[in-house]
Image (tube, rainbow, N blue to C red):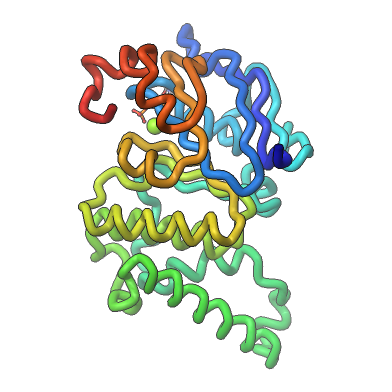
Length: 258
Ligand SMILES: Nc1ncnc2c1ncn2[C@@H]1O[C@H](COP(=O)(O)OP(=O)(O)OP(=O)(O)O)[C@@H](O)[C@H]1O
Ligand SMILES: [Mg+2]
C-alpha cells in the first residue's frame, strides 16, 4: 500500500436542516487518481469546499500528507500544494490566456517582490522558465495558438482547460478538479484526458469530480460514490460501474452516465 496523500475522516456539514455531507471518509493514495462521483446534489462540491476550508466542517478532519488542515486558510492550503479548480471556470477576463496560466505559477515563484521589481537576472530566468512551462501545458490542451488573446474570448470548454493549466502551474502535489469535463466537446475532453495522464506521469495526486463515466473509466484508479451526503460505495471503476447500488442511485437522475 502506498502512503495516503489525503485522508478525509468523518467529514460532516449541515446547511440549515440539510445534511449536505454526513460522516464522509476516504483516503487518496499518493500518485493515484480518485474519482468522486454521485448524482446532482450528492455533496461532491461541498466535500471539496470542506477539504480546502472554503467552508468550515461541522465534524471530521482532513489530513494532507499526515498534517491536519484544521483552521488553515484556503490560501495556506493552496500554498502547501493542495490546489483546486471550480465547477464553473474562474478565469481573469482582463488577461490573456498566457497571463491567466502564469498567475498559477506566480503562486510559487521564489523571487521576492524586491527582486522582481529590480528585474534581476535570476527573476528574469524564473519568468522565462514559467512562460516556457505555461506554453508547454497550453500546447498539451490545444490552447497554444490562443496564448495572446483575451481569455474571456475563449469558448467555455477552453476556459475550463485553461483553469486546469493554471492550477498545474502552481506545481500542486494534489489537484482537486470539480467537473473539469463539463461543457467540453469530444476533442477538448480528449485533450483533458491527455493532460490528466501527463499529470499522473508526473506523480501528482488527483481527486476528480466527474459525471463523464468514460473519462472516469479512462483515468481513475479508484472511485468513491457519494449519494445524499454519504459514501455509498467505493472501489475500482469497473466494480463501481457494475455495482447495483451505484446504478440505483443514478436511475432517474443520469442513467446515461452509468
Ligand atoms: N452554500 C450552501 N448553502 C446551502 N446549501 C448548500 C450550499 N452548498 C451546497 N448546498 C446544498 O448541499 C447539497 C450538496 O450540494 P453540492 O453542491 O455539494 O452537490 P454536488 O454533488 O456537487 O452536486 P452537482 O453534481 O450538482 O454539482 C445540495 O442539496 C445543495 O443544495
Ligand atoms: Mg458540484
